[in-house]
Image (cartoon, rainbow, N blue to C red; front, side):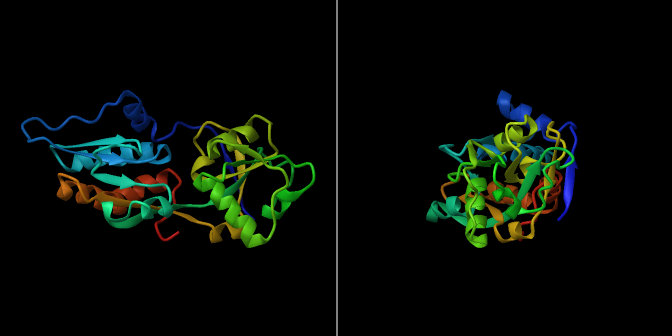
Length: 247
């Protein structure tokens, strides 16, 4: 097993997140005709999509990209946090493509005082383990691992997100947690360590993105999708802890 430590540093997405909070998008270049699209994404992807949108606008003078929530009524592009969500959209989207992946890690206090070496250790009597709800992709991945291993966690602490599970470990309310690697990566302002287990490679989550069939600017929307799945998007996604689309 491999253990990684996380120490606080400023997230590369801080600026992008600020744009989302204030509802501001990058202005178009002077003298160019406005062309805008809206990208719909769940909260777990909004900051990284905003960071890619900033790069896209710099590469496409006059273009404007607004990143909105998953219920955006007039979206031109949709990114989802699992493939099941994209599948439910059916013919409303055109040719979904994978752009990133994510996998579970075990989160423990710095130095791993409980000597957790893998998923099997989380079944120890008295070990407090935090996991996110199985209604969320990170929780569904835990259920997949339990099925693969034919073993279930004993009375885990269910929380609302992977970030909350990590916070439980950082605050001492849990001895360990299961979260996505993006939710426990270095630079998120929490002091924790992570432990890998090969079984997590069997429960990888993959993220798709697609152009909305009803978009008024399919050309610009397709250009944005190509940016997300291309080198520009790949660099931003990798920096923020996401794995390659193939997993």
